[in-house]
Image (cartoon, rainbow, N blue to C red):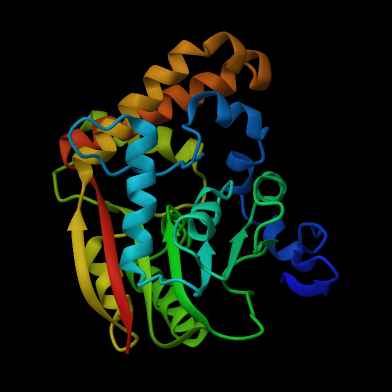
Length: 303
């Protein structure tokens, strides 16, 4: 947790030193996807470094659409000036930075299971009232409640792919129960997650699932109903929208940008790993186009 220190020149936030990865986090195989050099992701992501679906309006390019997505999540979470906000799965810190600079929050704290992401986010947010911890949501114990919680692209990694539906819902219910405890009365969550679509699977879909599983091991895409069921008695759903075509457009932009930096990307992470990224994104786009996956955005109010 960041600490507030008063000096002769005013107030400043002191960030904690980056902790070592705990034994608990060492078991998260998904970490290996994010422990690549941040410079690789910076080659093809936009300046926000958002690695989740953007929110487009007519005329938007990728960077503006990603800013619009961050603002949507802030609004969905009821973020107001002076608020204290938690970002679950904060990535490289783009949301944390925007919460402070554009939405006037007094303190933003991000948690990630990637030490590399935490390092980058801390450097990015240096001098801002921001702290970043290498920690799972299960282990997070704040000093005091938050006014709002935002989370984009982390929910898909909470449950295990081969777990039963009952086990998945139980895990999601634990997440919402913890968020309920972490939030002040009336607090909200702005949540974004890929979700399963209802289209029947074919051979191509099965192969696409295999490719995505290779890129994101130990992850499970939830059914929309599982998210809603797990939130019951902890949160009221105030808004729920589906934006699968926005994700198709986002992934298409990423693939174009990856193609333009192929030589540099291969030099950074190797050809095999680079091709895995391209194959994973192509498979994810096909799943969305075929209706095997969708993109959910929700505003949830604490009961």
